[in-house]
Length: 215
Image (cartoon, rainbow, N blue to C red; front, side, top):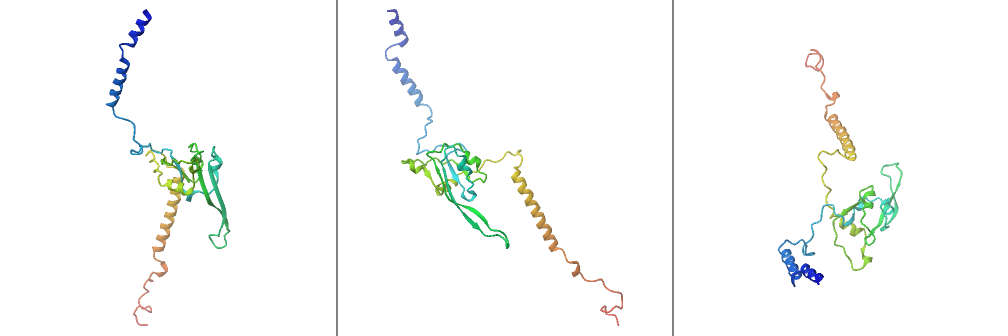
């Protein structure tokens, strides 16, 4: 009997649990909601979000590094070789890889970003685009045309720290550009300088021919 009395004291009066639940509901109703009514309200994504991978086709040299390093083997690349004529007379022809197909199967992709990190030519970038759901899993393999469309949604990289050192690549390019500009300026100054052979001769002594003196 004592145990029944103790249990009744802990449970409180009948309906107390319902009252507590309603109190929690009323207290929550007065707070600001954190639920976004998607798709009417689009979410505010953090910068550099990993949505999909965009392809900058002009930078791709078909080196196959991204496909070889992908742990899921979800990147498919096809290419062929073409002969490029010599740029200068007497030069040698060279062969060049031409991209035929670049596709990513996002049904297999685990968004690790290894392909973007290993690309030595900056041909792959993260795009914050995330609205690419499909009803058929086979439609999640997107070809290079779609990957190129996503490239235009890639945000600009964040600005460097004002106190950071200039990247070595930028410093080398700037040094080369400065040398070229200095050489061009020297050539322009040399071309603008008067030719000493075109300068008028010094006048001869009085009575010399051509000075108006009688011969």
